[in-house]
Length: 332
Picture 1: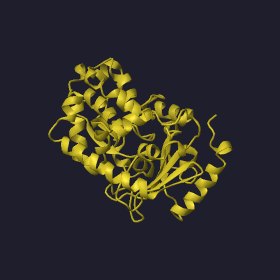
Picture 2: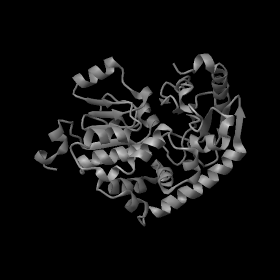
Picture 3: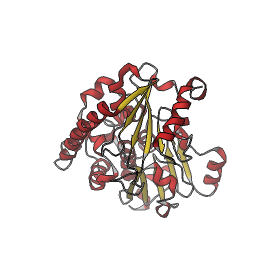
Picture 4: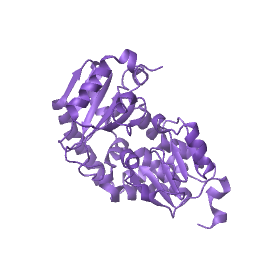
């Protein structure tokens, strides 16, 4: 892109040659906005544990834009909305003094933040239709009825993962080049992935029904070693008004954060957003950071890696904290 035509230059925003984004719908849409500003930028999808472990440090420098991921002081442009990812005042001041640019806002999604920053300078109007859905999914505003209906956008969201890098790059290319949501959902290369996501949800539903136990209004779902994944919506929709939150155990005992097809053991915590005021009762990020300094996310949706000696010991500590939640986890 010729410098004089760059919307980044016109806006006084940092130029970049690489984008690193989270590997979910929010991260992908945020990356699509950034790539629309610089079509020549290469895009890598990652997840929080890879960033926090240092596994992708070699990809991060002042030419890198990072979005929807933990803060990294060596990147050039940082955009995010997770409370536990936010650099403190000293970190941000040092980052900016060293030439970095930081955009952190408590927006419903990272894609919304990227859209708000860049839409005044380039035409990304084709993303207006999907943006409210991304906001709702990432901030827990999807209704139980919408979730149970399981429309094609939700299926598209579930089809995205680091296991499907070619698929993610194709969806990214369409969204960054101006394709409408309808064109994306009915693209012949994407339709099979949407069908796959539909079938995977059916398999995950069976695991939820057979391997979830509700203890003291916390739904504990054991998806570890089962080859399926799910976010909190599936578990809390099943639990209904019997649970205030859920804990989902994913991954494999012999897994690794560097092998997307066989990930390490991890736990995800989600508030039951289908309950009235369900998202604003407990700061679940305290559970996610209790034993794993690299854990975190939102107060109502977060995660961490299982720490030694293992799942049962971790669950014992989390259940103790949950049992004292009126003092330990209550939202201020």
